[in-house]
Amino acid sequence: MAFVLLRKITNIPMPDFIETFIYHYVILRNMELISTVSKGSRMDQIYIPKNRHGLSIGSYVVIKPLENAPEQAQEDGENKSKRYFYYNIDSIEPLKIRIINEIMFMLHKYLDSYDNILITGSFAENGFNFNDIDIVVVSSSNTEIKPIQAKIQERTGIKADIIVIANDALIEGLSTDPLYQMMLSKCIARERFIYKIKDRIDYKVLDLHLLKSKPLIDNFDVLNGGEKYHLTRNLAAIKLFLHSKKISKESVDREIKSIFSLKDIMEIKDNLLDKKRFIAKYKRVYDETFKMILAGINK
Amino acid sequence: MVQNRNKLLDLFIGNIANAVVHRILERCIDNQEIAKRYVKESATSLEIAKRYREKINPTEDFLPVKDIDYIRTKIVNKVNSELIFRISKGYKGIDLDLVSKFADDALKEMKVAE
Picture 1 (cartoon, each protein chain N blue to C red):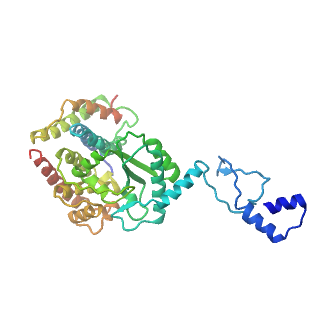
Picture 2: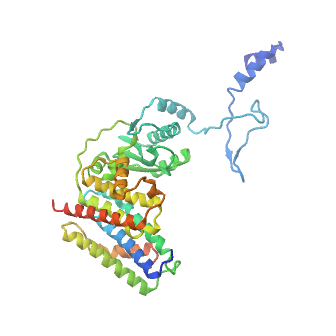
């Protein structure tokens, strides 16, 4: 830049290669324009002034949101150095790591206080077979979650399902609720956590849970494969819990395969079941589990 | 699958009854922090009930009074029977007075009655 100004002022000739170098590596590399995204009929667009130095027609550019740009840069740096804790996750796709960083950064920024942030559910499984991201925020404060959910969806394009739970309630849930155990058996945590929890049979909680699986018996035909899988998984998790067995997605899937003599769990998800055989076994397991729960009432 | 109206009504009733049982049992959980986690789970039965309701004529209007009476009585009986069975096994804290009110609420949600 100094050479350009010097030449303009003094008219001293300057070698071409210096001029080219300055143009490409000083002016263009530092060039920034601020503009807004305008709504178009078929595509949205960003207008930039016709009289500009650089950014010629056909050149490739990077578009970034201006909002909180310096903070974002600083936080990005922090996020890079921040290590999260992966529980029972052997490998994770790089793209998911970027999403995790983004979500952790946003929650850290918008939550007043929290003890931990856990990302769980189908997002923590291999592949990209998830519709939303289940997030558990361990916090005692009453935080309004909806605006944060909206911001995460806006930034990542993925629906976030956030529940806020106090640490005591989480521990209570883990000791009495098989689905809490399954949920936290595979997760990504912002902070390290160790929960040494002794299972406690709460017949009221288990009864309520089991009731959720009841509709499959009478409504087999109207349920899709995914719904059948969820209701069956719920039943199998309760059964394992009552028998004091370890609960994780893998152990529950194994139990389902064993109960219904399935080669692959996808037989349920793909709705390829033999209705008569499946319902007969399902009803038997449901009744046995219900009996076990009710038998615990007076203990 | 072609289903006759009575069969649809029975399936509809079964799911509403299940949702009402769920709502009453939610209130029996001792720890309210835990209890509120289960509120949305009754939605599974209601969601299925909605699918049947969409097939029961008139779909865009409330059902005839005769149908409403039949559905309501069946729901109340089913729910009472489920709850009384639990009480007989020693289940504590079940409030049977809530059955009628919760059944009416569910019927309004399903646009069966005003």
